[in-house]
Image (cartoon, rainbow over all chains, first blue to last red):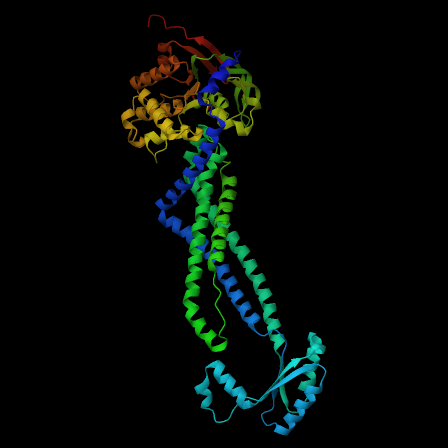
Length: 325
Length: 227
Ligand SMILES: Nc1ncnc2c1ncn2[C@@H]1O[C@H](COP(=O)(O)OP(=O)(O)OP(=O)(O)O)[C@@H](O)[C@H]1O
Ligand SMILES: [Mg+2]
């Protein structure tokens, strides 16, 4: 073809200005956003299934994380300064106890010793545990007198503390020595471990979300094969064809995240009363951690992101294969 | 408008569909493409649409060299070519109106402009009163006309039709062909692949014939002696 002006003529018919292009781009985003939602709502069964899968996969690690943070709160509210509890023999005579107290107070590793008689221990226990009546039924007090030792600077190191514990355990009238710090530290270690396990589980479930949404998108693409081919044939760009599917993935993620937040909130709401009653018994300032607004937004945001990503991956894999033939 | 020079197309399975094909179609022409089944008519149109790429030679459409066209430009090229393909028919999950509007939505027209153009296109094919119908409720001939409306709604300077009268009776076929001639009279370059030699002969336009992927004839068909 020799005449070059004819190309110009062809272009004039459909040439759109840049602002037109930008406007049509956003217009299509809007219509894809709403259109994909309409499409999802028009097949409520399928939509609910996928949303539920996403929601459960998100709710599980979220519940575990919130539970962990509650346990951590419990551990933190424990007096973190190390204490040594010394349980004395039930038959120990007062004079022997008096001597031991004096000797302990002279040790350089010991900053302070507090003596609790077996009656005091029983009273404390009754007050804290709520087992008051049951204990009153007992004839003899089964609880031993207890010394609470606050270690001095010389025993802040765990090893030094342990040596101090061993030394006291060797005393004749001492039944048992427990290092409270040890208990708190173990709890902390468990927490770290627990968080790692939850993280691994969350990663696995996130992968599950990606696959579930990817598969749903693959089916959606397959169902709309003819439409995709015709759109490409009449000049639809890859972006144009891709957009509705990406939005479907985003919607699934968003709805799944919202439903997951609801599930978690409902779960904690159910146990809230019980926890509040227990907290009153043991430690009045304990407040049950829940997802909160921040956590809810994070969960929904994460769900949307995963849905979007899953759709994006599926679309990349499957859409390229659908071309007019 | 269409320029093929020494174009060959060999499919991946090794089949040679077009061999050393050269011809030009000027702007505003109407040409028929004929040839036995498997001669390469559809392949030729797929090259123009960049559904397939030439193995050798040059394809130039409206000054655009398709050999050098990048993937990202293909959609914009296709918006300049209206197609009526037999196997890419209408979408039955939406109305006639929405089917015809698809190319305009893709090109990003404003909805008022879309409405105006869709109705103009449906008017030209005589289906203005069916815009709300689902295409599945239309006859074969009517469906074909909706397809034509979709192909011309974007006012492309070039219109391709691959066997647009394939399943239609002679009367409807003639009607469809007249429709294409009407678009041609408005300046649109039209290329129609067809087996219907009798109909083509009666219309007396330029005919390009293929045989085994090669050019067998280019020009007016000789009129039959004595009818
Ligand atoms: N995708 C493909 N892969 C391999 N071979 C193909 C492909 N498409 C077409 N062919 C072969 O190329 C040749 C030309 O096919 P084409 O569809 O262009 O013929 P046609 O002239 O349109 O025939 P018909 O009149 O039957 O539609 C045929 O032999 C066909 O088998
Ligand atoms: Mg063919």
